[in-house]
Structure formats: C-alpha cells, structure tokens
Amino acid sequence: MTAIARLPSAGRALAGVAGGVAVAALLGFRLAGHDEFVTDPVGVLALAAGATGAAVAATRLDRVGNRRAGTLATWLCAALLAYLVLAAWAVWAVTAGHPTAALAVAAWNSAWIPPLALMQLTASAAIRTGARAPWTHPVLAAVIGTVTLANALLTTASEPFTGLPTIAPESWRTVIEPVGAFATLLGVLALLLVPVTLWRAALGSEGSARARIGIAAAGATAAPLTVCFCLLLAIARDPGAVEPSLGSVAFLVALAGASAFSTACALIAARGGVERRQVAIVVRGTGLAGAALAVIGTGTIIAAPGLRLGATSVAFLVAAVTAVVGGGAWTGTGRLTRILTPQVPQASQVPQAPNDKGLAAPTGGVPVTGLTPREAEVLAVLAEGASNAGIAAQLVVSERTVDAHLRAIFVKLGLTPDAETNRRVRATRIWLDHAAANRDHRG
Image (cartoon, rainbow, N blue to C red; front, top):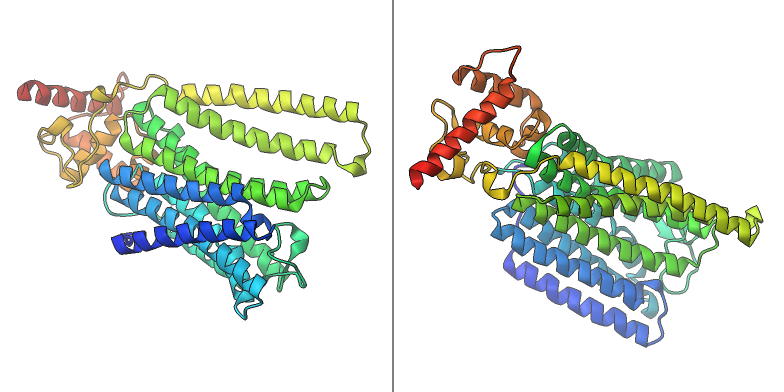
C-alpha cells in the first residue's frame, strides 16, 4: 500500500451533510419517543464531536505537511459520520418495518469497527516520512476489514426485539460461533500490532525522536483500550447487572473520545518539538484510562450481587483496588514520561527531519558531503536520537536496511569502531556541527 486514496472535496462535503442530517434525524427520533440507546443525545453528540475533531485534525495535519496522516484523519471523520448515518437508517427501517431493516442493523452493528483501525493508522502515520506505508498498516487494514465483514455476515440481532438492540451479549447471536470468536480474537490481536511496534521503537530511541514516537504510540493505544472498555461492559452487564442502554451509550462516548485522543496525538507528533508537558498529559491520560478500566472492572465484580458482600466490605475493597491500581498507574506513567523525555531539546535545536523531496539537509543547507539523499535522511533521524527501530518506523524501511545505511554512513564519514567512543554519537555530532555551520553561513 503505497498511497491512501484521498476523499475528494465533494465527498467530504457530502459526508458532512449526511452526518448532520443523521444527527438531526436521531435527535428527532428521540423526541418522537424512540428511547433506544442509539438515539441518546449524549452518544449522538459525542460521535458528532469526535467526527468534527477528526476533521479539524485532518486540516491541521495537512498544514504541517503530513498529508498521509491528514487523509487518514479525514477517513476517520467519514467513518464516524457513517456510523451515525447507519444508525439513523437502522432506527427508521426497524420502526417502519422496512424490508431493509435486517441489512441496516447488520451494517450498523459493524460500523464501529473501522474507526478503531483508522485512529491507529492516523496516529502511526503522523511520524512517517515519504509516500510508503509500513507493513503493519496494510496488515491492520486487511484484518480489520475482514473482521468487519465477518461481523456483519455472522452476527444478527436476537429476534424478536423492539427497536435497536444494545451491545449486551444476549441481544445478539452468531451464526457460526467458532468463526465469530476467531474473527474477534484476530481483530484484537491486529489492534495490538501497531501500538507494540511503536512503543518498541520509542523506548529504543533517545531525545526528541523518543518523545514523538511515544506520543504516536499512545495515540495508537487508544483503540485497544476502547475494545477493553467494550469487554468491560459485558462484565458490567453480567455479573454487574448494569443497565445495557447506559453501558451502550458509554461505549459510544468512549469511541468518540478515543478518536479525538488519537487525532490529537497525531497532530502533536507530526508537529515535532514535543514538550515534556505534552508527553506527561498524553502518557498519564493513557495510563490512567487503563487503570480506570481495571478499577471499574474489578469493582463491578466485587459489587456483583452473587458475591453477597456487605456495603462496607465492597467499599473497602474498591477503595483498596483504586489506591493500588491508581497509585501504580500514576507512578508508572510518571516514570515513563521521564524515560520518553530525558532531556528533550528545544525545537530550534532539533535537526530538521527529511523534507518531502527526500533531501535531508540540516536547517535548509546542503546534505553532508558524500552521503546519498537516503543516507542523509537516515543520519538526520539518527541525530534526533532514534534507534534503528525508530529510524525504520519513521522512514518506513526495514531495520536491516537501516543497519546497512548506517554502516555506509560510518564508512563515508570515516568513523571506524572505537572502544572509547560510540559511532552513532560521533555521527550525530558531525550532523549537528554541519547544521550549525549551515546556520552560520546563512547568517
């Protein structure tokens, strides 16, 4: 996959109009007495806000020169609006007894899956350069597309039902249960692929590269956290005895919030010059969200009627779990923030990343003498503190290719192995000195 089809201007306008009509229709159904969770104003407006945030992020990503991430954010916006449109169609079709009701419900029941992949792809694309996509992107797209289709074909609402069913397990049945379970597991594993790859690249890097990749990794983590929240709702339903409609609305809000968080992370990572405060907010937000899910899930089980614990015991146990998990998350995310931003240089001190033409020149000067444009790109990202995995992630090449480029760079720069100094550090020093010379020359 070398390119992402860009949604035409007419298509974006049509998606916006259709989304606006869908929001108005769903709110109108609510006023008319249709009390399904899908017409709840909180969930409807949350999804609309998530779509709006994705559209704004798409525009800003285009402005900073990352058209790939901007295009993916546009598709995320369109996917959230499509979810609203399908919801309105499903409510109308079920209410009117229209022949398309079963098709509408099946499509609506699967429309929440593609945004999960799109929010990951947007965050991941924010740190990439060039037109190529890493291998994780087409794999994720193919798996999530397959899972979406399988869910639409195999999962149907339990009959009879009044209005649209909630996400409670008893509201749905799977035609071929083993296949459905396998598809679900495959989808969950696919959603872990991008975050794991990005976290590995971030933790192996240094300096500003570590912070930028870490921000993108946190944005990609929002999708699996949303899936965990969905699974938590099943626990809240049984044994927690939580009202399914309330849980379903909460899921819509979580989906919208995760989309907004991922696109915000993409925008921060794409801009560069990441500040410690930004890293702290993103990392703490991600960690505490995961901790909150753990506390809620554990608390729901503790408070389940079947355990027959007294109110005092429940309160004590929930407080203890909250203190342990919350405190651990706060301490852990603080440590991770310090790891990601040990001494992040100011934006003016960070070597410029490769430009769109593939010629990485320090602060607008000429490339380092003797290096090919691609080797100059590799050296530029190396100078930001990126590990081999971090360089591979940003330039969309294999780590083996990065290693080959680095060997060639060291030879051309005359950097022989030395027990007292590190060739990566010496190469970075040469790049920074060359950048300073270019600035002085321009001045």
